[in-house]
Image 1 (cartoon, rainbow, N blue to C red):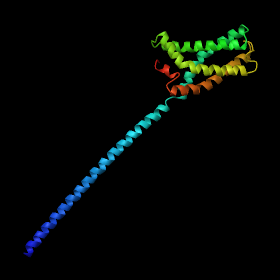
Image 2 (cartoon, one colour):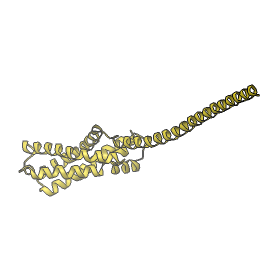
Image 3 (cartoon, one colour):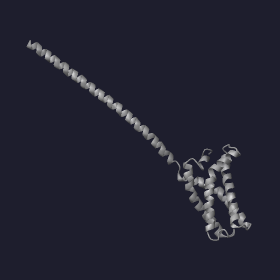
Length: 205
């Protein structure tokens, strides 16, 4: 009897041990599954959260100073042609400062818009569509440029009254264009960064 009980006890002990091992194995497996399950959603949420942030930051830094400077230079070219022509005509005819500046500003807008229209007309737009693009692209830039450079011309003593053969006239005008360029470039950078100003022309290049 004693031997039989010992054998049963030994068998029972083995069964319990095996059951314990099996339970422990089950707990480990369950714990591993639980850990993996928790880790993946957390990682996915973090990745999903990071991607939009990267996209948002990427959108803000897209406009370079070079791009803004090129847009300003394009605008300045048309404005300079019109404004120089207006200054030359007004001065040659002996007009007063107000009339000369009015003519120069008017021609600056005409040539500024015309230069942009020539570029977008090559892309196949109609004259009406090209004019709309030019108005949207250049209006703010030309306004800022004209206020600045004509303001400089008025501030420089004797510049507006100097003759066309005077170095003072041409020197003051060149200086006025430089100041206008430096002031307008940040304005164009801000506009392009928001999809406005010269940004509307980029789609047709």
